[in-house]
Amino acid sequence: MTAEFITIEGIPKPASRIALGTWAMGGSMWGGPDDDNAAKTIDKALDVGINLIDTAPVYGFGHSEEILGKALEGRRDRVVLATKVGLNWQDGQVFRDSRKARIEEELDASLKRLRTDHIDLYQVHWPDPKTPFEETARALEKSVQSGKVRALGLSNFSPEQMDEFRKFAPVAAIQPPYNLFEREIEKDILPYAVTNKLVVLAYGPLCRGLLSGKMTAEHVFTGDDLRKVDPKFQQPRFSQYLNAVEGLKTIAEQHGKSLLALAIRWVLDRGPTIALWGARKPEQITGVQDAFGWTLSKDDMAAIDAILDKTITDPVGPEFMAPPARS
Ligand code: NAP
Image 1 (tube, rainbow, N blue to C red):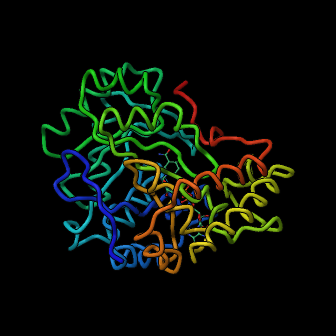
Image 2: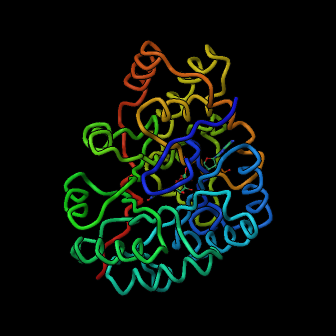
């Protein structure tokens, strides 16, 4: 089965509905980098039909973009390249910064690290409460006019914030968290995307590995791995999510699929979505094709909801990841 594609307005090449997420390749917050495996993962992604790759300057403080730039040399035209803007850092501390000067500086730094003259999708990583959206939007619109950027996206924005931003610059895509365990966007952001014809790049489709089907209660996270502080991975809540995983596996088995394929398929069946699969080893994405060529029925969706309702009695979202505002 070949990949499914979706068009993001302003980007000539249709994007694969499974994209490669490269946060972990940067190393920081994921226990350290492994450049050799990262490069092989990018090769593998292209081999299995993935053409959208998502990164950000903050992933490894430039390292993820550097790996990608190197890996794509000579074949940049094969991919829809998505990166982000609007975070800054000092002494390893990340904060929001979408001022015009920061955007101009970051754009040129990203182009250099990515070894390209244009970014296909340029996304504001987090809304900056200390900078008027007009300032950010006008600076980004200028980058589209100059040809350095093809289309703009907004990540972690509320509908009200998107409305305000879109008064000053057109937006083609959004990037919120979305997976079987993190469904907050269904109440407002997903309907907003449908109404306004925005493509949704769903981040964390495997819920940081919980939905890989490989996670156990004994799993030990090492180094600076963010799951040491992720409230989903703390007991007794961790066990609730693992019980949900066991229930979801039965639905996957009914389709002859893995839990991981079910988790990705579920995201793809919920709207105009792209699943941003976070991988850093080539073998992790060998199963991409299993998520294509089938769908979940209404009955499957209802059975899934019943499992989640029964097992997760103390749900929590991904809010712990939000970086602070500029001080
Ligand atoms: P994710 O895709 O939900 O999960 C990544 C985790 O899944 C990793 O722990 C990885 O294991 C595991 N995994 C992947 N394939 C696997 C396989 N075949 N078998 C077993 N485990 C597997 O989470 P994410 O990386 O947080 O999110 C994906 C992407 O979304 C990021 O890379 C980034 O591009 C984007 N993102 C954006 C934002 C934002 O604010 N805009 C926030 C978060 C993420 P290992 O740990 O063993 O590698």
